[in-house]
Length: 392
Ligand SMILES: [Zn+2]
Image (cartoon, rainbow, N blue to C red; front, side, top):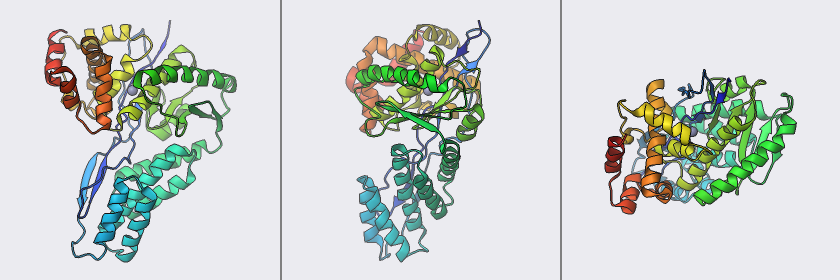
């Protein structure tokens, strides 16, 4: 029987990009959003496969820019930075606007204003869909800081999204907003079932993670024609789904929206919970490990992952902090996913799920997973990693 298979791919670690704002410490930017791609790949037999998406990778770069200490706008700039760090984005934009207007040839002010505008756009893009105003804010940010390729890439994605989704039909449930175009037969009838299934997953995952994403604004779920999906995410048309703050999935005419599709949406929803519980800096191995381990019935995948790992070169966890799909080739990405699942399962079995969840929560507080792990287990994470490898 040919079975479409859910599979997991990349971590939604947003690229972090920082301008050091003179003379203060640079705040971290939540701006760029690399899609977490979760590919559902039709394969022969029941083998799971992974693909490396062609989506623009998260541009994680940290740039610094110094304003001249003698600048008469330095104090206002500092005030704006403080506002930015407190999350008072409108206020930060207002103050940076004044700095930029006062010294329009000073690059640092233009870049700082771009940063604030981009943060504002990203925040509102998660609250309001479709958000034409967010695209306009980001357009201005790109004009102010044309060297920021991460912002330009995000803008390109948002423009495509706006063009594609402007006529979409939108239906809501308690925690989700499902957007789609009424082209595929049966989609209207199935939308209520999809939302009901998502709400069931939500209740279970909210209990596990003890957070409730989708309360401030509903979690967006967009269903596309395969070509639209590829256009917006940069992923292959046959990829299963992605998460970049929006759960996105292609729904080809021949694709069944049954149990496998439901499992894939659950996987993406887990990424949304991980982001809510742990912020945007949860390591890739932990994010993807949890998304696979918390699927409905992980036993078969776990068995397959463990057997695939035996005798294979090991990728150090320390090099799996970012998006797994940024790894160099498909085989490495596949192994990274298998490792992530198997190691998370091991940590759960050896130390309890509470420790796994504590690692996520620690990320939100800015603590390293190593430090959190050690505080809970008196073991270094590298020691647990070595023990796990020895037991494979
Ligand atoms: Zn995933």
